[in-house]
Image (cartoon, rainbow, N blue to C red; front, side, top):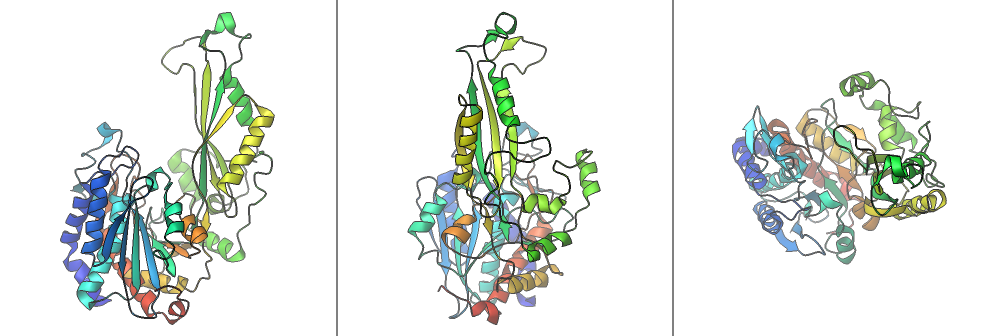
Length: 458
């Protein structure tokens, strides 16, 4: 890969400028800011990488597809990324404006630098570099850039079901999120899912004086407090009936991989100011994020929250919550169990379903694991950490569940990238290595006999 790597090094400044130009274009799916224009620019970037590209409508913001054939018999790789970004608020917390990218201390700052424009652009630049140096790609490559990942990808699964032939591939590769907190590169085989919801309780038809009405009118905040307490006990066990019935334990290979992950628990606790980890006790740090579902109260709202006191009995209260799902759980089934629990324990409370993503897992013994690992090692200087499941969520079940494709994550962002926060940034050295990594992975997949023997798509 020396020839390709030399090309990447020679074009470092041009690649950074291309990323800066991409970050300058707002693409906030939650508000619509800049979205139609961004879809067109994403198409142009895919075309500039040497692929045929189209903008595809959905029931929401469009997708961008790309395709370029490779040698006969080589695998077909579908590269997934997303061109939408999080809202930049609060604007006054940014050192430089979120859509005016600025390089400081070897990092490019701006909304979308790491999540996800820099990471999918690294993949595209790798394709362009292979074409520039070698005149062709070692694999057939397809690209799918999502315009709705930051709002839960509500239209992605339906598009995949309607377009199975266009998305036919042997495997999926995605780059998103940070490397290991200690700085090591990692190869990711799965993610947890998510099911978000609100619990809404009502009391009187208006707020009341707590002296004149306390003890007479029900308090919806207390209603929610008791309901939430019935869902998880003090030992950390989720007590919603049937909640964990479908949970499948990790296998021996996955557990061994978790045991090899370098986590300094005491350092994590010190950094976060924690005296102890959450209940239940007895679970390893990595196991907590990979093998177990969670129920989280994101916020509890109602009544007065300002300075001083206001002796008010609120008329309404809302709890915002999410569940992180693990392998074999399904969002619809979990929602039904939560709704049944609410009917039993607080029948006057309304549960409102919000966005959801299913969990995803790819077997670690896939024939594609070794060529991907080898490609990463060739570019990064050492083999990556193997991560069975990330704690966060991505719409990867569309690929593993709907399309039945093994799916592999190669995060390229620095651990302190501040994605979703002010001063989001991407370390430009990692960006450079990311371009080389993506090129080397395609090359290893194209030359691997084990991977090529399992090809299913052209």
